[in-house]
Length: 114
Length: 114
Image (cartoon, rainbow over all chains, first blue to last red):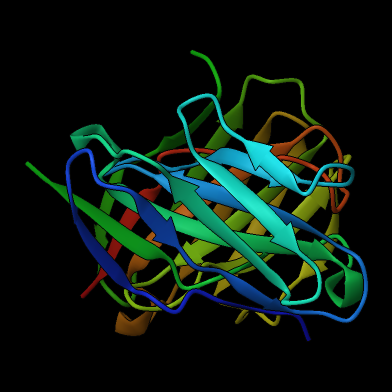
């Protein structure tokens, strides 16, 4: 079965500092990779996704993630965070052994402090 | 209304009650999903409907009964629930049922079973 590991359950960071949220997945075949964000009292929304092509994908609000096949990782980064980035971030994977199903990691709560 | 809506937003029910959760998507999508989000656990996929047919039933107890009367509406009928069923129930939709699809989530129904 597919699995996704987000090693950090919480990441506190000061405003304007860089941040990296880690994601590793288990699969020996090609997969699709996603990052979703959940703001308080809301559902999840897509931040970015990797389907194929360039291993570096970017979102419209300054986040980026790099697909690393050899390390089976898809870490999320932002060079300078804002208070408004405070949310829970979920890494997810589909394809491979899980077929069409989206398998989520446990989530990382990003807490941006002034 | 745009996107994916869910009603009610909050629900408190006793173990002997029967209630239903409603989801509606205004995106013209063909696939709809029910997820369970519990504290400290990854999102769990419960059911998937594609073109109004159930395509996934992820070992969910029979006290949860889904219904998809048309491509825009999805229901989750609840009866004789247990306190451990208390969670946030999220509905999502995507254009089609496939591993590369972006899922669009509603805000969820927060359920408390007493």
